Image (cartoon, rainbow over all chains, first blue to last red; front, side):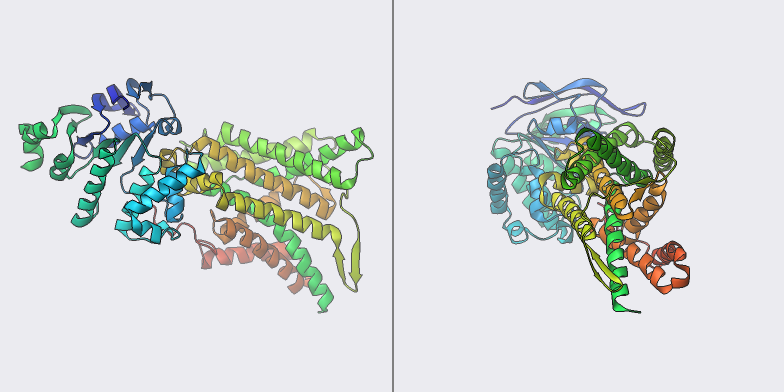
Length: 236
Length: 307
């Protein structure tokens, strides 16, 4: 088993204004760690910082004993991190199979790519049926499967999932959460960003609440559920 | 009009179409990947022609007895390699640096770069302001039937051009790197999240497009038997128009657009035999009409939603 991801005192800015002001958290393998917070609290920026799309200007992000801050995104992804981005962001003009291949872009062994694809097709038989269809012509639920499958293609050790239930029907949201739990049980560290607080806390082991670029609450899912501030902010 | 003459026009049109398609592919690749119009692209075609000519002079001086076939091979390889390098340098020093600037700045900068390339050849190439004869490196065998002359050199040139375009197309549709190019073109940020090295893909794209331009330059020299420092202006305008009427960002569109433009020119020459000098005016005029009728080009690229 590998070490957790340690985010320590990260500051990230767009221009001159800090969006993250000293964020510290840990994400453990085999656990679902959730990140809660309202719009504009800095959740997306934190993800961009981890992935190197908007690198932090100070602080450190250590994954598996290696510093990520300062690496380009492709260097960070190569360490075993994958992301299922918000809004699915599938490649609409590529086939389902090409989308999956993009998920394993850094994997040079075609045998491994094929084995992983086979695994994804077993989880989502629907994708196998449609593997030569252009992803952009599929329904929203199927596109969500493509996006999740693509995120799993590299067999990541840390999977970042950004707002997976956005725009999906309740039945599909349930499916998604079930799959996220399976991913985690296979030993992957899952970092889950969600607006759907009730369901998220139900499947998470622990979590953090972000507000105005700072961690304002943290603990196990149970502790967060009973935290008076979280209750007031999310459960009314 | 007699059948032989018409066929002759058709063949000439196909030759021009291939040349234009090679230039248009560059415009469409650059736009697809970076959303930029690189106005210096026509001048890269011209510099490619001069690079080929220079390679010929050198080789001729060092190995005077070299066969024409080998000579052409080296001329083409040297010109394409040096333009690929020029493309990478352009991308690295200019286009990528201007990414955060307004798109108009990139447009202006590439226009100025075009002028710099053009003037550099005019001023620094020996006797650069005059047209340069381009050596006939292909066999001059031909089959003459009345007005129709089937020339072997044209057939070879056309086949080489087609081979190059098909190779680029296969690279983009069938290989891992090509998949990365398409991914960056569709959604650069998501491609980066998948582990694509964005800068490397931009360099690859500029190398590919500029190498195709270099081949168009050599093709131009072999077809017209001369090159000159100003030829990139018209070729650039034609290549850009071809890419736009085909549908910017789509590689089939660029090829289609290239041949469509050559067809229009040829049609202009056939329909206005008394004023065939106006064939470009006719062709560009029709391009304007096509753009009014179909603003997104034959193959619309940007219609699909960008999530």
